[in-house]
Length: 286
Image (tube, rainbow, N blue to C red):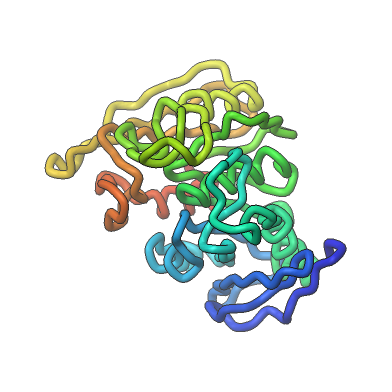
């Protein structure tokens, strides 16, 4: 267990539980499917800004996908419904949030589950939306050795340094018309004041370079629903040590693909949750 961390006994699937990290009480939900084997795979799912564990659990629908595959799903809660990631923010909502050790919080939960024999340390995955995607990328940048794959919806790498410690499987979803996280990079938020980030292509390229990829290959667009105003282009890489998949939603906004839109339009062409579950837990590409 990480020094300075105390954790209450893990309880039944879905109940709100608490952990103390560095003297601060944090909360989370844990989904455990019936009949889950010892040392099962774990998917950590991180909510977006102003979201919550309960909100992303209901909205993204990971429980159903995990149940089919015998996986656990961990839903942490951010302080002030936000995550402290690698972006250099000037607009902090509170001193409590500004000092939050969210990386330590996530790692503490994962460490305890591993120590209890509940989770296979070689099959821990992290996914997040928006601010949660930024934290997922922060964990990839700082602790790549702890995760078997990362999935990101509507987020990219910050302009601050990111040195991946090893090749890490990536599935990245991003809308070209995202009004909050610019597809080409720049300032986050409607006024661009929530930190500077790299563009979609640069983010995918950093992971591809670490994996030794040689060539980007684009598939024909997926456009099954002509009414939703979007099409999906899957960009894969050849010659990689691990898969790097960039799912570009042409005309897409800030929403989670396949789920009801919240902040802006979400494509109905694909289901990002199903794609991530298959990518993480079965090693399948779309």
